[in-house]
Length: 399
Image 1 (cartoon, rainbow, N blue to C red):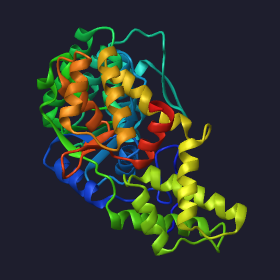
Image 2: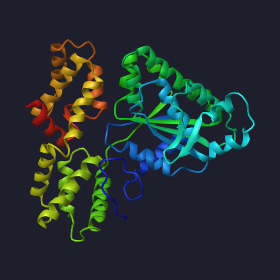
Image 3: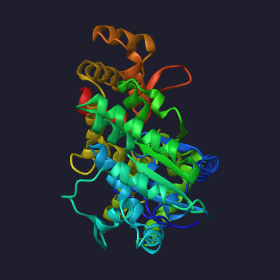
């Protein structure tokens, strides 16, 4: 079993950081080979970006894979500029154009002339140049030979881009969705595919625009939490990584089981921050972790005002971004209730929605469930997915 390094800031990128999710990886490749465009559907910190980075680093034969996060994109032209740069930054594509179209005139020569140079930062494009990058992308793609490798764009944080573009102008958001659908449909014959992902529900964002038909050709693939065996393996490999620094550090099987019991939502982020804190405790005291230590470490994570506050605060911030004012207030009351009482049935949620004069409660429950706040248990009671998030919410929001 290979050791792993803890990675809680950026995506876990690289063999020494990425914990392979073979079931998800195989499912993605199966759908890609069927010619589908995909959406990785999961809340934040469940490992979506890490999976995409792994796919980019490990393409199968006959596939050229390009990754880009578009979270900050706020215009249609900027989005397609990012796609355009991805195309030109690839040596196999750029060399093809350079060799075969050196003597070209018109549009093909036009895009080559706009490049100011290639550096460690990638392709530089003159910011003063007025360019319709959607059309430029189409021109580039149309000149790819039919025998060229299947080109796959991995577009991370895509729902954020849709939301940013449509925030002040719904028509612009609809136009954006129409253009990217046209791109998916028009270039089927040259083996162009897209894999989107994001930490807010694409369906929730698009439903607000009233045009869910514009994404009905995209196949959803869920990224679930780790199962018990995967979670225990992750802990074991993280410990092996930390033992390269302190060989005496260890976590018993009993303590692993206790961690998984306390951390109800088995996503890599929560597991890693717990192990990281346990290692810090060991460095400071020289004592092996106990159940009491686990309790203290989780309490520290929840109450820490500096190290983890931005992560937890983001749950509240993103909720406000996803919902209108009265819907947000309704969702806030629902989460406050669940964090205080532990669970909540649908009738109680409905009564709260009536109090807030909510027209469509489903919009709120979709956001809360898809974005990873709550889910229904076997008794159809709504509960927080994560005990850690529940406790943080109770202390910092509900109280």
